[in-house]
Image 1 (tube, rainbow, N blue to C red):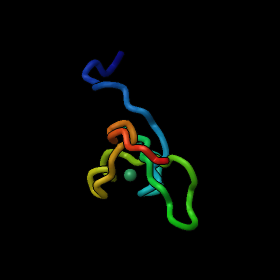
Image 2 (image 1 turned 90 degrees about the horizontal axis):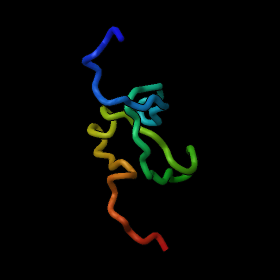
Image 3 (image 1 turned 90 degrees about the vertical axis):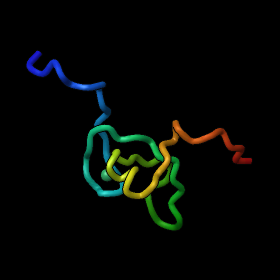
Length: 65
Ligand SMILES: [Zn+2]
């Protein structure tokens, strides 16, 4: 172990907002209008703050019916 100060493990993934791989991406329940990736998209922490996104896990339980 060369880095004992590492924080909680972060998930690597593709940030759909800045179009690049990033650490600590979160699933964003964002509905693309028109063309775009369907289903869930991921955003990194920076983009979440920049765009005011709400991680799927942090969203309140709202009925979608
Ligand atoms: Zn991003």
